[in-house]
Length: 92
Image (cartoon, rainbow, N blue to C red; front, side, top):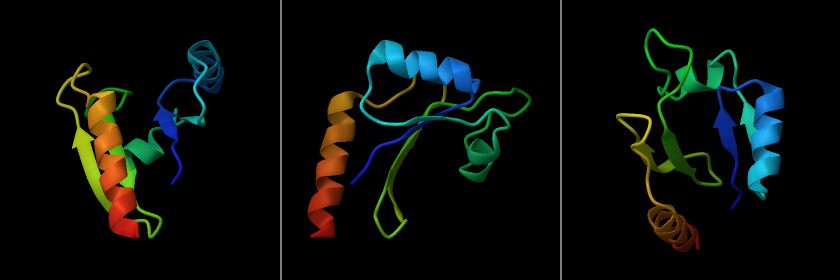
């Protein structure tokens, strides 16, 4: 199981953010919002995406998702860890 994040920020901004947070996973840039549109999380009329978290199985099935209703509506780290553990167990 892997982790990646996607941001609507410019590549340079994403690199700086990833470096400043010292995250251990890729932070990808989606400045044209193609991924956000494809996943249904682009904010209409704005050049940003709503906060969204997806847990995707190795078979590329969406196991779980949380699409925020505002910029602060995000799942907790604990919730994400619980869901990923359930997804891992279900895959066995």
